[in-house]
Amino acid sequence: MSENPQDPFAEILGGIEEQFGQALFEKRAVAAVLAARATGVVYVEAVSNGVPHELAQAMAAEFWDAETGRAGIEEPESDEE
Image 1 (cartoon, rainbow, N blue to C red):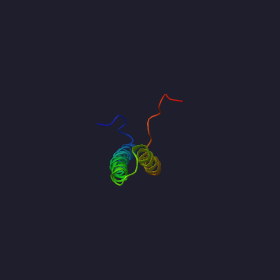
Image 2: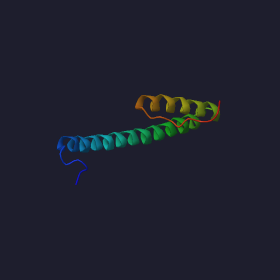
Image 3: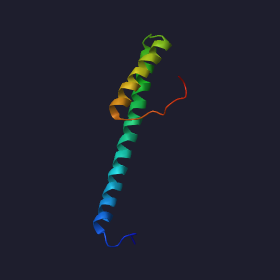
């Protein structure tokens, strides 16, 4: 039973909001996994084709930054300055 049985509209909206929240979470999770896989591919392909490790790592980091920014994935803040 809901907390406020006199407001079925709020209950319906709450259910819809929960469904949209779950769908958004799933979409962001899929985007994060795909970005991680693609970032790994960028690094592995670069190294496999003779790109030095440091440069390949920078290329992969740049790709990650671009993709996670586009997908709206927020990275945790670090304490480094």
